[in-house]
Image (cartoon, rainbow, N blue to C red):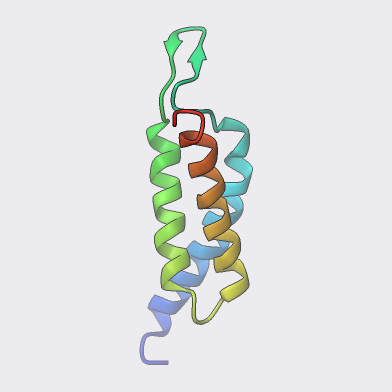
Length: 87
């Protein structure tokens, strides 16, 4: 392992962000959903979380394939939940 610290950080990020993505499912809403304050749109915090999950899942694909698949599945489900009702 030429970069053990980088691998440890990537592993920690993967095993933290993927469960966090699944825990945030209750906050997902379609991009055209209406709230009591008006039109909702996409939450920037969840969009950043999903981008981080996507990047970390792709970077750790070779070593932790099962958790990476779960992370990519969470990103796909978020995209489907957010954008499919708009199309």
